[in-house]
Length: 136
Image 1 (tube, rainbow, N blue to C red):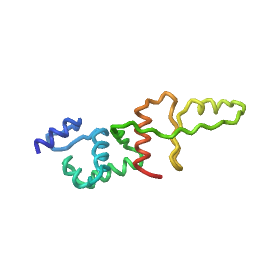
Image 2 (cartoon, rainbow, N blue to C red):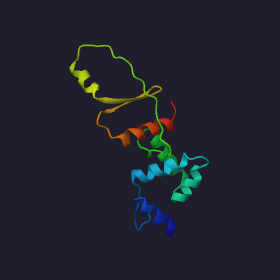
Image 3 (cartoon, one colour):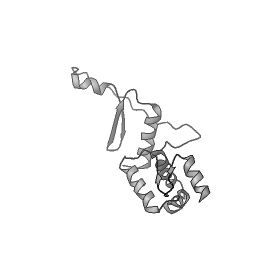
Image 4 (cartoon, helix red, strand yellow):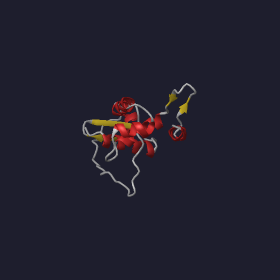
C-alpha cells in the first residue's frame, strides 16, 4: 500500500489519516485516459490506482459528459487535421456577429465547439483529442 500511496501522492492526490483521498481532476483524467489504452481494462487501472472499478467508471462517465477533460495523447509524430477553407458571403456586420468573428470553431460530426480566438493551443488539442476518443 505504501507504493500505491507514493504513486498517488506524486499525482497530487491528498491522502488523509482516515484513509480518505481527495483526487485532483488531473489525476482522475490520467486514470480515465489509461483505461482507453490498447488492452487496458477498468479493473486493472482501478487496481493500480487503489480504487474500486465503479469509481473509475463514474470518472469515465464524467469524461463522456464533458465534465472531466482528458490529457492530450502524446504522439511521436505530429498529427495534422485537414483544413477546410470556404468563402463566407459578405453580409452587413451586426453587433452580435462581431463576437463570432473572433472564435475558433471545431466541428466533428454534429458536435460544434467554439472557443475564443486567444484559446491556448494546448486547450484546443485537448478538446480535439477528447472528440476523437468519443466518436459522434
